[in-house]
Image 1 (cartoon, one colour):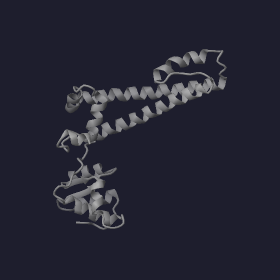
Image 2 (cartoon, rainbow, N blue to C red):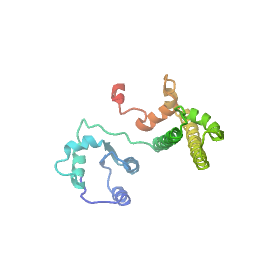
Image 3 (cartoon, rainbow, N blue to C red):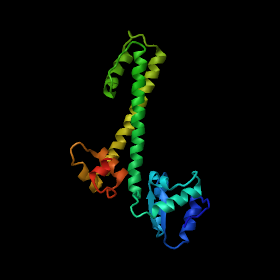
Image 4 (cartoon, rainbow, N blue to C red):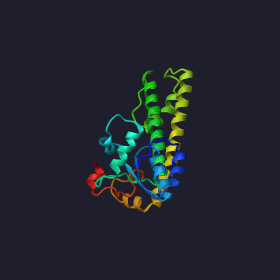
Amino acid sequence: MVVRKKFSRKQLLHFMANLRVVLIGMEACGGSHFLARTLREQGHEVCLIPAQYVKPFVKTNKIYYIDAEAIAEAVGRPRMRFVPIKSVEQFDMQSLHRLREGWVRRRTGVINQLRGLLMERGIAVRKEQRHIKDALPGILEDADNKLSRAMRVLLLQACSEMKQLQSQIDATDAVIRRMAGEDEVCQRLVEVPGIGPVIATAMISAIGHGAAFKKGRGFAA
């Protein structure tokens, strides 16, 4: 069944709640996992299809009802590959990793900015956070490096931001370690050399228990 009508999310869930159990195909995208979980709770069978597997079935220009027809055709294919529906726990892990990634990126940006500002004033500091962290107090106290008062204030503010970001990253790492310790699959993954709690939880948040992959080669690809 293809419904050629636009629904809000609330209207869609209300509409589907009044239907008998049906097979629902959806393109995997932002918000699709929430809808899939909710529709599955209503008793429906839900299949999420990667967008690249739907595209070959789109016959003309990309508009809503043509996309819906393409999804309806794709979901019935006997050898179609589907995306596993992520659990709330997986999304919690994924959200944690996304926030952590953003904080790490911003911390790196602050460090590079600090090194660039100091380089412009003839002060070279080695790469990595520990070097800028160790060198900055001495640079700020050195009265012979000709740094202006305004520049010293700016460096202090940037250093404070770097420390705050590091504090957020450390707190997130503690939560990740706790999550990894509570998850049986993560505990098995961390036994593999080179895999720690961060990588283990990132893998679980992305692929779950890996049931969608028949071989390790498929996961690697």
